[in-house]
Image (tube, rainbow, N blue to C red; front, side):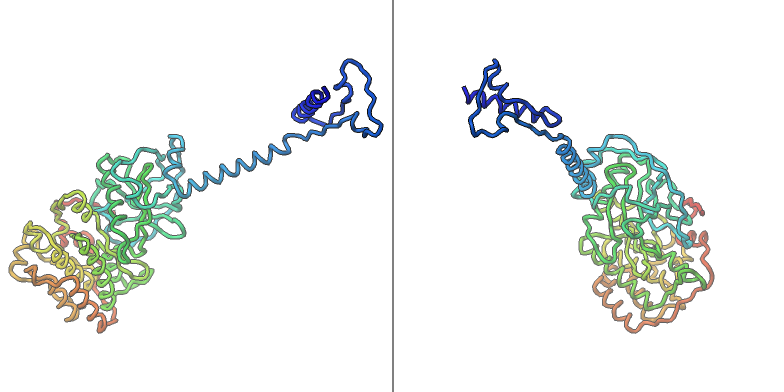
Amino acid sequence: MFIFHSCTVFFYVYYIRRVQPKSTKFNICSLLWPNGLQYTPPLHSPPLFLLAEIRVYEQEVIIVPVLLLSGFLVTLVFILLLHFCPERVDKIRPRTSKVTTRRILHGIDAPPGINVFEHESIALDMSNSYSTFSPPNTYSSKKLPRQRLPESFNQVSPLPADFSLRTNSCVSLHRAWMENRNVVLRVLKDNADATERHSFLGFASFLAQLGPHPFLPELLGVVSLRAPLVTVVEELENRDLLSFLWRCRQESVDPPCEMTERLIYTMAKQVASALEFLHSKDLLHGNIRARSVLVSKEHTAKLWGLHGVYTRKNQGVTQAEDPSMKKWQAPEVLARRPANQSSDIWSFGVLLYEMVTLGEAPFAEIHVSELLQFHQRGKNLKKHSNCSNTLYSIIKSCCQWKEQDRPTMIDLGRKLISAEKTASDKLLKASGIVNVERYLQEAGYGESNSYTVF
């Protein structure tokens, strides 16, 4: 009986600890003998036996720290997912559009020149709201470069181009600031169809699989989980080589632009290294010229214009006839025979001519329709006053009628290294600023190509 009443006291005390909000006093005797029976306590029993005091602390003292700790852990996990797994965060977020306000910024002061990304197409309209969609199943996240969030781009502004030759391009170019460096954004426009989206992501995947090379522009990531689709590429401050050469004709430009014979060999070696890298992967460039080369602030040349490489490699599509490319094409390509590595060697020789003339159109006096017959008669590019005998001999060796008479990439690299050792550091000069419309005609764009000068 005593044990039973002791258990009753224990559960009553437990009840008070769970329910009572403050200290509580009660008489245990009234609990043990509820019928009014008198109980005489032992002689030496402590007085606390008759009176028990239960102190119950406020539950908030324990609950509040637990809630704060739980909230901190949930926030920490979300931040880690946002940084390392943005594609998972995108799936967690509700399918609602996020409106961003466009920041009014001015573009950089660009030199007169042609948009080097014309055949790749890139632009970002920050006034459009972002929308989410399922990316094509063809390209998994493993095949694409690192995912980026649009919120990571700051100071976005259109990349100026002085004239455009493809008004129907589905891609536009923007300049932005990301991770303490300037980058170029290749942005797919909102009106692009499913085929164009597939091609855009396919090109990004191709660049990622191609791998890094010191003389190819660095691919920094993509935005493929929401619209607009974006490819992030490093910015090379001097933009395309053709614009750089045209600025070298001007006496006072900021920043200063100077070209020497030694610099020609240095840049040519860098382009040749990138071209040899492509050839080692059984890839043909097919569009070697000054417009396909980008120049950094330190005058490092990097080969671009790789969209045609992707098209031939992954889609099995041959490049359509483009009058604007014929002045750089080898005779076998003009004759509609399959291109090969020696075809790129021919175009490389024409690139050297562009560099030494500071951006003159090759074969300027020859009409495109007469170009193949001109080559067949054994005629070659004229020697410019800036061109040394050594450089001119390299140009002629590249532009041989017979494919087997042209040097290999290894032989060409050796010639460039040897010639650089004795090259002159004298500044190259050319008279007058280039007339853009005249250049387009001489370069073979012709009347069939409608172009707009901005």
